[in-house]
Structures are given as C-alpha cells and as structure tokens.
Length: 186
Image (cartoon, rainbow, N blue to C red; front, side, top):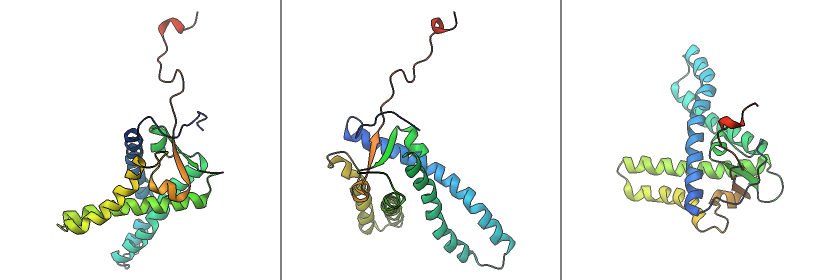
C-alpha cells in the first residue's frame, strides 16, 4: 500500500485530466483481459450445451460484464484506493469524508459507467451518420470529465456526485534515482 501523502490534484487541471485518461486507458486494457478470462467458462458452457441460442449468451454477458467490472474496480478502490492504472499514473481514490465504502464505490462505478456508456453510444451514433443525435451522449461524457476544469478541487462529476476524490500522489524523494557506482559495497 502506498503511504505517500497525496495532494488534491497534480499541478494544472489539464494534467489532472490527462492523468485520469491515462489511468482509464490502462485500466480499460486490463478490464478487457479480465472480461475475457471471466467470460471463457460461460462461453465454453454455452458451446458444450449448443442448444442454447447466442442471444441468451449475449444477454447473460451483458449483465455479467458490468458485475465483473465492478469486482475489478470496486475491490481495488475499497481495498487500496488504486487500480493498476491509477497506480501507474500515481492517482488514488478516497472518500471525501470518512472511509471509502463499497456502496460509495458502487455509486461512483455506476456513474462512471454511464459516462463511458454515453461515449460509446455517441461514437456508435456518429459512425452511423446520426451526428446530431450523437452530440447528446458525447456532451454527457464531456461534461462529466470537463467538470474537472470548473471544480475547485479538479474533481470529475462522478466524484462530486459519489462523494469521492481522486488524489495525486507525488513522487517520493529519491524515487527513480539510479544507484551510483560509488554507492556500492566498500
């Protein structure tokens, strides 16, 4: 567990947004791997019992994947305050007041899932040529994250609504320094 003191945000709101998007991208790749591993037993069971239709599998996975996603994010947030992506980008999630509960983590997850779902839906509509309709879900996603530029503590909308804060963890003194040759054994 990281014991460094965290500050509210890295210097500059643009940096806060870039760090969050970096951590989100990192976690998205990991989440796809987790989904593949979690879906494999179900897909194999459906393949063995080939009598079931693929629409049933799609329905099952449509409900299952968000639960698996929360198992990844919720466990990491409640346990250490950091997913692997957040750790790589030196970010930490904390409750605005008190301890980060599973309920608070679930609220944050559902809100963030809604914003990302809006982004995906907006892109899908845009690719279909429904540009005017696509602006609404894209604006919803944009508002959630661009909130960082207007929030006094550079927090995203889902953090404000869920009572959480994403904090920047500065490098500890001496971190990243390579040992010098003259510091070896005497």
